[in-house]
Length: 413
Image (cartoon, rainbow, N blue to C red):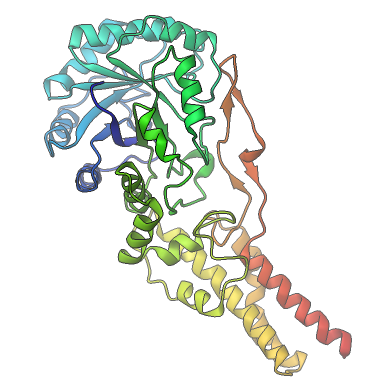
């Protein structure tokens, strides 16, 4: 690869983006100084499950539109070939894509039970380069961690320089990626600098209950000097993905990613929703006990027309109403109200049980689940303690405080 890649890989599980969303993503990337978009959505049938079926005429026309939409953005089309795929199979499938203008093919071998296929994946990639005259981005089956494995050794032994190999960091989803980790991965891949498939802000699979609206953090700025590039895997909602993508683009340009995010969420009215969907330890966490004024802002959030975002907005509003009721109870007790005066204003506290059952997690509601799996020297996934993080929500904190205040007046009655 002659230059570093930076941009987005639409590689999540779940409902793929529309053509209009992809074009909007390309427009945003071009405006923010990125240079790459990769089409590789798991749920597109002819990308993965029906990989042998030819792309339809409409799909090929859409690819051509994406490829030629903005010459600042290189568009790569991805394919997940099945275990029986031959070079000829892939050539037949992808030649119309190349004829449409694609110059980089992405071969996705991730999440496949084929850890003995390193050599075959290398040969397939070489065949594509040679016969189609393109470069290849390769997602290996062993794509996480910093250890070598028989699969990686076979894959990287003699691998052509036209093939760039991806890596997600020390785990599938990771809070931090360091230069030291990247350098170690480079060595285990035969001194090939990895292209980071960065699984942020993605919210598919076990993360489908969460929105990730925070800034791009935990990536050493010096990573830019030791990797082949970075591709962000976004959320099912393009709109919700844009704050972190904009923040990450600032990081790539050598600017302050947090400042860029802050300007974005204020400009586009994301800040309250972002804070309401954050977790302790994140920079945009509003605190364990936000002010009454903050909850009033949450309740006042306008209805959202985006079905990929609106459930979280409604969950946050419902939780905030419970917290405001807790404030009312505590303020009334502090002003000397009788227990009988509190019944009506305390009734919303009973909504806690229903709110905790809401699939869309907000206000720190847990457990927080993420695929913080690494891959060991066998290439197999290894679970870590970060997969499940138990949290106590802001709403539970406030109901607890209201109960404690009620206990105090019961003790004196």
